[in-house]
Image 1 (cartoon, rainbow, N blue to C red):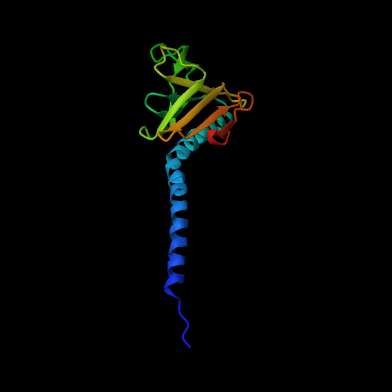
Image 2 (image 1 turned 90 degrees about the vertical axis):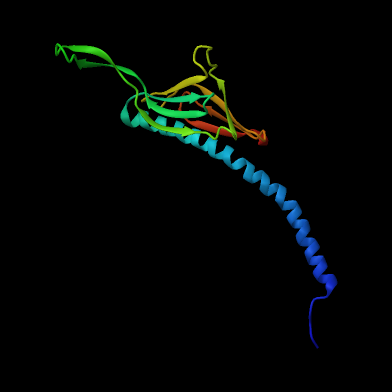
Length: 173
């Protein structure tokens, strides 16, 4: 006797597979839509961690520059006053050491929006904020949101005492 699947059994299997596919596609799209957002918040968080580590290792203050309008986050050395010989007289004078760009992150402008909550930007700063990380591991206060076009959002806060970041998925609140 030959054993085979009947047409009804095959149709039931196809219907169940179609049902599972119909349920899983929206969930898969939701995951794929969040990928640029999660990458953006991850880049900002890693740049803050790198700034804290560089400040401690170099024993020099480091700045993280947040530019809301251009969606750029950059890590630079902080400008500082140093004693250096005057090139003309040879005498020691105080000069300002220029900042050096160490690393930067470009957020995908069409998919991610960077919103700085704390500290508030002045009207003169043109949407730029510098957060300083100090050699003792502390930092200035920061709270920002990274939002995408689908209105998914993550909130990043920086603890000024420890200089460590916390990321919260606002969807889970």
